[in-house]
Length: 487
Image 1: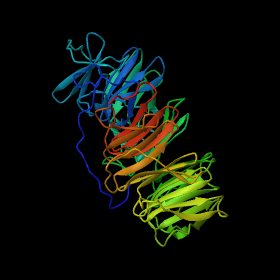
Image 2: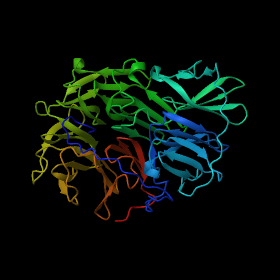
Image 3: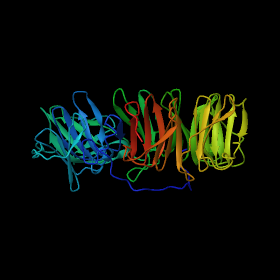
């Protein structure tokens, strides 16, 4: 479940994040534990360097590592910067990056990401050459002679800064398409996309080598899906206006079925096949409601939840799941041989392979699943639910209810997702993240003071000892194998 109309949302102010070797530093963590991915395509200034090129963006300080030929995750307020939107950058006499946000100034060691508050004279920026009148652009981009670049979705981004690099290289920033550099001998412009297309991440899937993120859009964009191929550090964007067969890029939830990408969107459900072709199903194709809430894969089908029931999709066919009439499905999760539903009228399960399995109502002995349930998550035979009546857990193999340490209290609609592994239970909410360490039976809470970009956390995804959180302001990645938070 990502977001439902009428859910109780507590929009809390974003507090200043923690730093590293900085006045607001939280000494429990290191930069390697918490890293963020933000919208960095709105850039205002570039400072080329021999090892690193620094870029000032609205999503933090971005560094390009020339030796490794890849981007580093941006430094943000969660890392100690006074603000996310950077006004000016420069090079200090000691080689650090001077970062100015409003009236505050900090210095960043580009090799470590650590912040320093001591002051050194700032060096003069590199020269600013004349804006080229003609450049040959990468496919999908067009350099306009008046100092603008046309890119995906026909975004026309003005060049905001241009600086000379080494040799014949010229670096330039744009307001909407990120960073690019040109070889003035060949007049070839190469754009270097990085970061999210939009910052409000409601849906997230992560594999060993790929991340896909989407959401409803933010104040700069109506939607858009971001795909990051980690091994090659390549960033691509899926936009409905440029994609045949995709009716909307406002994403509610995501799922992978082998090579196929499935998206629950505000217009129905969309599938990208291995060939790259997209298809979208709407109410005209048999959906009970275009207002989707969740999607999952298991038991021989793709399952889609809506505000008026659920459907199972096999091949190109949609079949309604016989839940109570017009049941509001808030979340779904596929477990060991079963699919589980969290609805506004309790919890349901489907056991067996679709369509030959059995749908049944699951009731808690204390009635804690009789009302509205916000989220559901699975780990093997274990099934966990969370809602305003607290959290409950069930062993579907033995049929026994499991003890759960008390957490909360949770307001209606506060819980947004449940993700489990063999050592932890992760509950995301609109007021941060709760983590249960199974061995100790103790809950820990994380928010901006620990490293989250924003306490409004919508979704999460696990890869090994790393958990990824989709938040209102972007994605935060937490490597929980490095150190555990102490009470």
